[in-house]
Image 1 (cartoon, rainbow, N blue to C red):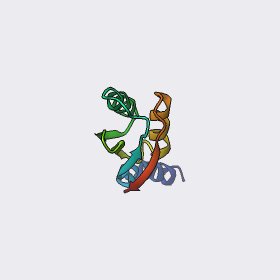
Image 2: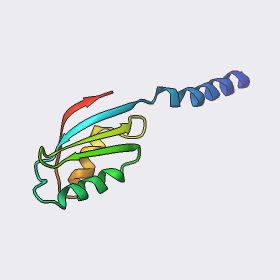
Image 3: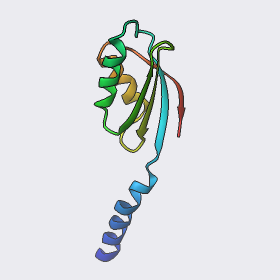
Image 4: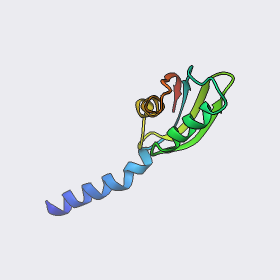
Length: 95
């Protein structure tokens, strides 16, 4: 019984990274109105664990974020921008 339990735990640990996927989310950030705003938004998103790429489109007031969905999610990204004074909303999310 102990070996079966140990084997089950080992399998779970080995397969969990395989279930993680890269996701991409586009956030609308209407509060980005000056040249410094995208820098602040980018830095806030860089602090979110699992974020691997951030593309800020200042003229469109959008940010495309690529992240590991096993480490973070859309809600955490929205919270990160709101915490630095830039409320955002998810426009598009894809795995």
